[in-house]
Image (cartoon, rainbow, N blue to C red; front, side):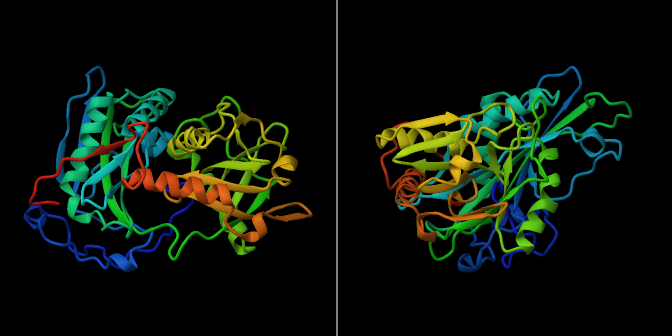
Amino acid sequence: SSRLGYTSHRDPCEINEEPTAAMSVQQDEQPPCDWDKLGFALTTTDTMYIAQLQEGDSWAPGELQPYGDIKMSPAAGVLNYGQGIFEGMKAQRTDAGDIVIFRPNCNSDRFAASAARLGMPTVPEDMFVDAVQSVVAANARWVPPTGKGALYIRPCLWGSGGILGVAPAPQFTFCIYACPVGPYFKGGMSPIALQVSDEHHRAAPGGQGGAKAIGNYAPGMVPCMKAKKQGFNEILYLDAVEHRYVEEAGAANFFCVKNGVVHTPALVGTILPGITRMSVIQIAKDLGHEVREERVDISFALEADECFCTGTAAVIAPIGRIQHGDRDVTFAGGEVGPLTRKLYDMLTGIQVGKVEDKHDWVRKVQVPNNKA
């Protein structure tokens, strides 16, 4: 997911022509892309995956087809009632030239949980992972060289059938597309500044905050824009009941460190169970740190030694500053905290094969020789 916010402009290496079937013959060619100028923006690639399911049927494997627009009824459940979910994943190149993906089974599990919450048929794990790998293999030429970025993968599930009443759609579409993205931090990690929102909340108990539902994201756009106008990178949301416990940073999971102990908000139904969050918790434990998943009071967070947030895009983003009301607190002297740095180096190292993968998180994608 963009978890920490993509820019909306087009990327300099975008294909301008309309996708056609003929594009498949270009797979062994280098894409029209300047890897050094690649940012976090939409860059259309060659191939996407589509599978459809009619009400009462079971999922069957879909098909790869040229990337392009999709026809959909104006009465589609996803367009009228927000019956849609998505995932965010990345494929990267190792130093050996292999293309790998990270913990796809966990994304599949979350995709299924999100689908169930929104009344949609869950996609079987084998089908999900196979589809992701097929899209990566078909777009292998768009995977940047090691250190230049990643191929961002976006699996989606939509209620695509037309329906007038508020009920599950009669047809569902499982789609996966991908686009190359540059490193989130160009020129090295740089701490971000967050503003605590007392006016807006990301989710409420009993809602859909724990699902990666499409409707969770648009409401955060205005608060984020307001914060950026005041010089902040993102919003830090508090709980909607007591207005004192930290929930998420924008659309990323929050962590703070105090006296070597790592604290992160517990998954209480209003917080998205991030794959990066889960991985950071395990690595911190592997490094010998105590990790506490608990309710994190904003007053406690402001006294932390270092803070960071996690998500697919940035992996780990150090937090240099948080403003809450009259308080404006700087962490680790405005620099990257030592544990933040260590966790980032460990996790990104595992993802590209530079650090031992003790937990079998990384999966190699088989790519035909003429496409790699």
